[in-house]
Image 1 (cartoon, rainbow, N blue to C red):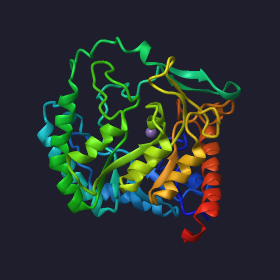
Image 2 (image 1 turned 90 degrees about the vertical axis):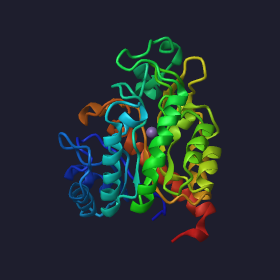
Image 3 (image 1 turned 180 degrees about the vertical axis):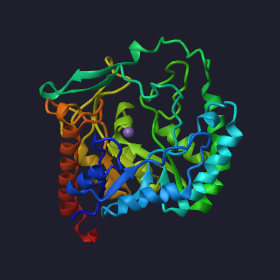
Image 4 (image 1 turned 120 degrees about the vertical axis):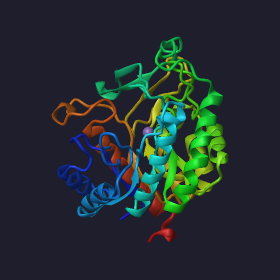
Length: 343
Ligand SMILES: [Mn+2]
């Protein structure tokens, strides 16, 4: 068995559904990269018992649950809206409950508080064999005016608000033993709809990690978004991984980038026309001693996916293909280059 930890999201309703957890185990996953409990009306605190119940449900199926790829909301803090002090207080209470229940990594949502925080200009663009995937072309949205409800923000506003959040939340995160991670903006180009997209480059993540130096601040390394930036993805994995800043990963590839004419399109994980050498990417995680879980991120929709349902980026067949491909890459890399490290 390979050392790398794998998770998957399949389109059967809630991720903690009994059938989902059984399927994950059957597909050879070790982990669930999950989400927190639904927030009760009128309260934003994630209660200890609710978190513990989820964790126990996952562990009963022989899987680990240490990573939530969400967190209690922080949009009032990041966008300086009314009630931000209360939101910060609730966030810190939740951190204590998360740590106590054994959740080690969370990922707050810093992207704009609008329904289309993840922008795509085409949800169904044909790719290999006529399968369809999502695509984004900045030229089609760069002139969209700011959302009336919020008005236009400046980049420095968002950086200042994020710094205020981290300065106040990281000490509690350290005490609770919880790491706060951030996913890049998707798409990583700015502005869109009046919102600056600040986490859109390697330099931006370096700046973020320097705002409040702490072992409890890190990166959700979304390969897809770093690929969309047009950067050398294996080099970026080594850059953040060597500093111990990657706590979980989204394995994904795209064709093009936000800066190229026509933008980018998501593709199958094993499609050699993608901009990232996926073998080199997987090898980079091994080189830096990455110990967190990873999961296939967005995959195209195939002709067979109507059976299983799902929405763009989250269909069954492409995800399962990706997981098998990832496990194959991991095994070949481990046996070829990292034999002596095998546990
Ligand atoms: Mn992602």
